[in-house]
Amino acid sequence: NAGVMQNPRHLVRRRGQEARLRCSPMKGHSHVYWYRQLPEEGLKFMVYLQKENIIDESGMPKERFSAEFPKEGPSILRIQQVVRGDSAAYFCASSPRASGYTDTQYFGPGTRLTVL
Amino acid sequence: SQQGEEDPQALSIQEGENATMNCSYKTSINNLQWYRQNSGRGLVHLILIRSNEREKHSGRLRVTLDTSKKSSSLLITASRAADTASYFCATSGNNRLAFGKGNQVVVIP
Image (tube, rainbow over the protein chains, first blue to last red):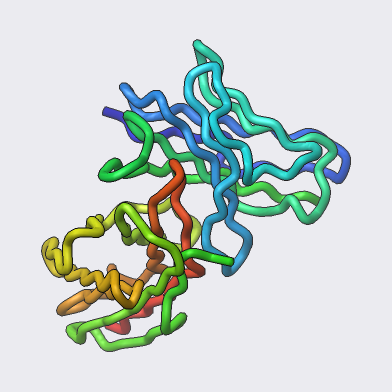
């Protein structure tokens, strides 16, 4: 059973370009979470999705950032018109159901975005 | 404000020694989890302790939880060089994990 897959592992973009980050959850997991980690910081929640639904996007910047988890295919985190401050590691996690009392979230290896 | 805050933030120990790190949080929780992150890698889940548990063991790991003080500790016994990593506590609630800033642990061979 493969773990959470993320690609690309490293992404370099120039200011103003778009960044698309992909996440394939573990088999059987229908809940996906995106987190961002700035250097020397812990992870910060961005968005929680189920198939075809955004459940909680309260951690997402209001502009330029969007996320989706279509019926088929990976979850996508999209950053439009990237700025240098978007440089960070973006982690995806999945769980078989809503992470409440006992469920653990399983993390992917992350995508490290560098904006030049 | 962050829900999890680890203390101390950096720890350097000799191989074979024990490493202890603490975490405090501010709100009520369902459970608290500890994760390890090796440099440049993703997070690996270590252990989960529920709000109605006080202590839990997993191999060389021992976690305590004091809900009255809103604090948790992670003890790694008989440390190894491979334990060198950052360790994060995370509280679970509202369908998300809230992470602290992490403890950097360096185990010197």
